[in-house]
Length: 329
Ligand SMILES: O=C(O)CCC(=O)C(=O)O
Ligand SMILES: [Fe+2]
Image (cartoon, rainbow, N blue to C red; front, side, top):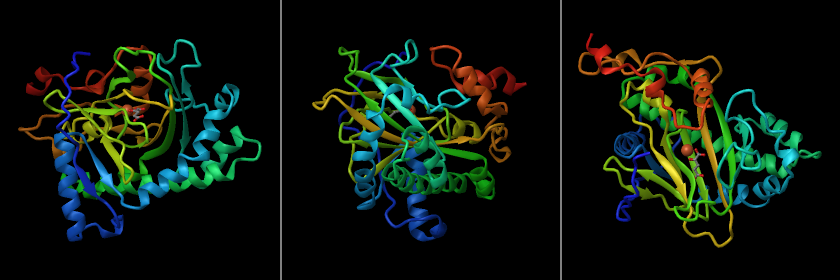
């Protein structure tokens, strides 16, 4: 991919304090201060750690105990019940030949902030519906969605787009992806997931104990994101790049597991993506002579189908980007 293995162990992604903040505090001095840190971090690194104090270890403890183990101890036939008619939104795993070249299994709970939706997921996998799993996934889903929405609001406010917040939130679907990694088959590079950008709006990544997440800095250095008990890592995806007409570049990241005594790594990802049929386009307020339109309107599901056609990395720039010559015309 051309991103050489240049590491910079001195660099760390910014940590921003979110304890006690919620949407009702929008406009308060604390909110505004967090917002300016969020936007600076996203413009420089495409990501940050949202520090949640005591809430984060509580949530992590709830999810990464029995509930996550119960899920991955299920047989493949049960896991395969987690389907979706859209690419990448159901079970993904190396148990499916030729699908995924890593020691990796992952399931996605659609609308994890909604208890009924989590219960529907659980009933498919366990005859008794696993109330313990449901409670953990739902509680985590609710918190992650609140964090995701704060970040959405802060970004829109900083770009003068706050009037679109309600419409934006209504246009999104949210999911919780739970993943188990084994020892990377690529023992030379220890790569457990190749370098990529997420196609969605925002992803909240929750690493558990075994680290591995790395993000690429603008200078081309890979920065290790240590799993931290009191924080969640927030990264923005390609869809936000389209909406902001390129003001927010998606965060390039990968997973490299260098030390893993237990042989397993678990992570939880809460992400927001445009709902079926939603067309993402650059906000007209962000297009002017100095900032020509960078993307054509993009039907998000069509983009995912395009991404799913081959194993090579695809990009929204290639799918719906406006070429430089076109913007000058
Ligand atoms: O497991 C992680 O820490 C990150 C995984 C990831 O980037 C992804 O699934 O898109
Ligand atoms: Fe990712």
